Length: 562
Image (cartoon, rainbow, N blue to C red; front, side, top):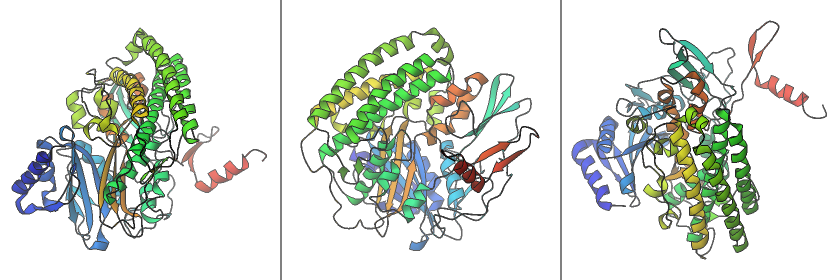
């Protein structure tokens, strides 16, 4: 981290914003926390962009109990300098309005729409003001993330409320994909506008069921409960989110964990990268009708799953990460077994890669499909293999080292293809880099103890921590604002799918409808599950939404033995 860059940014903000700059908050050398007037927020964002910042996420929270109204934070990564800068502004409770960043940062749209839904904030010049998180039947005036709304609120239901979708452009037809569709492994709705077989536009609607984990953490859980909840955010990246959350709390509290615990965290994270990339490779083969790839990739992946179970007791949701370190060690016998299994995986992966790269059918289904230029990738703030396939050398492990990555040698695969083929090549190369990283961890792992440290007394309220972890899908961001009663005042999670999914309509444009599944699948989307079921009566062709009580009654009647 270049401290000079941090001081230059502060100097720039003070000089350009003048009385719009309200001050900075003390932080570590690789973080910058600045407070500005809400009228200066857009200008501050422009300055950070011009200085080389990459937009990450918006963070909103209810600050009314402190008398400050509502807070809005925008964070920017300065990857070449290893710095993350966050600017915060407040709006009074009676007038919670901010200027939108979407005219200069299209990728900020989802964050702003989210807080429009969940906090009741308003945004001037927001390019798309439609609901994002809340369903169309959610009552007006109830904002779930406000402090006075209980976590278990059950608003009155409204049946037969349809999505309020855009009108198809003239000359096109709407083809709906989802919420349930054979090419989608989780519920999501894409309205695809087609002219013949050519895709001319798309509208996405997700968040079918918002699980409310951030609200739950702020009301019912303590700091030490949340790592186990964080691990369940994603069915693949459990350690990604538990490590990310723990790092954010550790940063806010000033807790420094043992080096051995940091190395063990890296082993867990890279094992997840291995089984995630192998899972994606198999799914990609399946989506283009090539199930031989699916079967071989998942056969190899199974060895990683057995390995994870031998280390933690579980194939997934390992329960290994806690604030202050990890719960279990890696013994010398386990380390030797890891090396043996990795040798087998590497050998079999080389054979599978050779078969895939030379296959003309796979090339025809992937090359040139879902193309997005490097400039568009920057515009939409893409992360992970989707960005690296478009020439962007972004990787939090290198740019913002955490855990033990600063001591490890590895390459970040980057290609210029800009299409589905490029994302596949990047992921295949990353399999070998993950193996390389794990081997180094096992060879270099220090013997220092303890594996876990305890917090010395309560964490003071009002401390901020912002952590990044490079998930298999890309950069994940966790923000923590400490609160009273040993629980966070605010916990914000931004998964890598969040920015990547916003660019899918651009990836689909001018492609063939038959390529829709693999284009969407190329970002490896992680989408929440749903609790709504549409019932179609075949005889009358009538439709109705199944209520929660009816679904529960049916499920109980269909249990074994009933």
